[in-house]
Length: 132
Image (cartoon, rainbow, N blue to C red; front, top):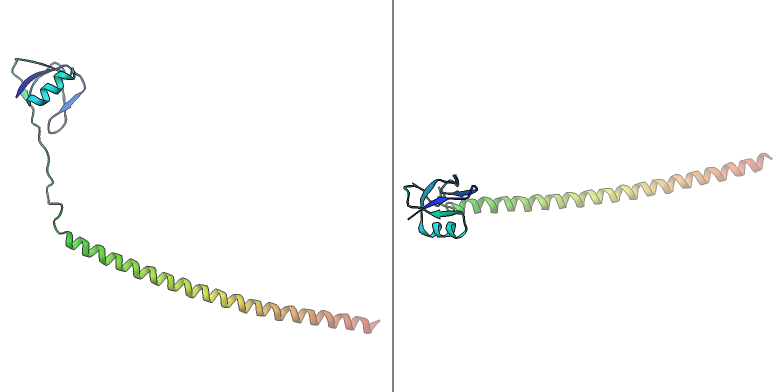
């Protein structure tokens, strides 16, 4: 451990990234002290200082715990999604078929109505000729 006096007003360290005060002396690891001194952020000191705690946080629960249950849920959801997509494709096909049938029926009605209109027009023309 080494004692350093902080020169920089913008230096953070410790387990909670606490802001270090300029002019205050801290007791830190020798490698960290050398880096700070080399960078001009601190200078070596002989005064008694406050010890900094450098800790690494670990996850509270293991990451790989119960991944098989999660994978099972994921697989089930994927199967449901595939089934829903298949159902949607079937419905789309049914709707496209129904639309095509309606188009054909409408086209037939249009042909019939056009024929009736043409026949009525021809009859009117014929009646007009006879009336003259």
